Length: 192
Image 1 (cartoon, rainbow, N blue to C red):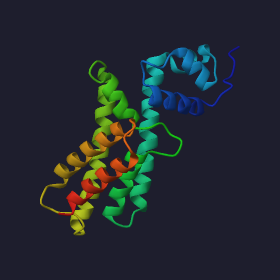
Image 2 (image 1 turned 135 degrees about the vertical axis):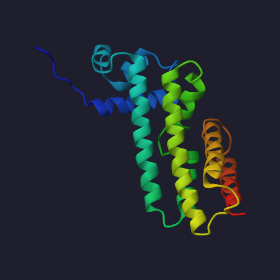
Image 3 (image 1 turned 90 degrees about the vertical axis):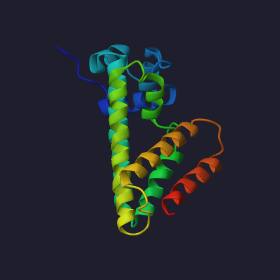
Image 4 (image 1 turned 120 degrees about the horizontal axis):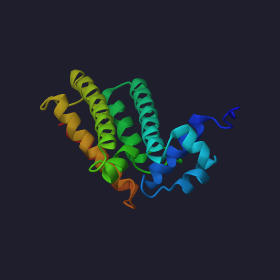
């Protein structure tokens, strides 16, 4: 008779996600995962197959979580500028108690050049963020908040590039004030 799971799968997946997010794929050992997730090695293999599959599921978990938070923040915004400020704050400051940076940016830098599946997941996630930025910029252009000197798609690509840089810099000892100055200037460029 098979034993029933003595853990909630999403709860342990969240723990694995945070560990991969903080340390990266290659630095995270199975022993680290066992200790951090609080379940037996056999349970990890039975539930998630192997470390790579667990990592890919953790990436999916991160994407779903981030998409939901970004969508909720934008939806609650009264103006496009407020929505864009929310996105920049969320991306550059992160969440209280969460690892620094972005799991997708970190994973792309670490693995995308040699792992097609990680590359594909990162590209899709980046495209989603760009599409959200297109929607916010278009909203701001329609309302006269943002310049229409450039197409919304071009501005979204520019903004996404800035956000990606901010998420990389957020993992370093760069002062938070510098990240804030970059965010402010990047947003001001839209208004000219």
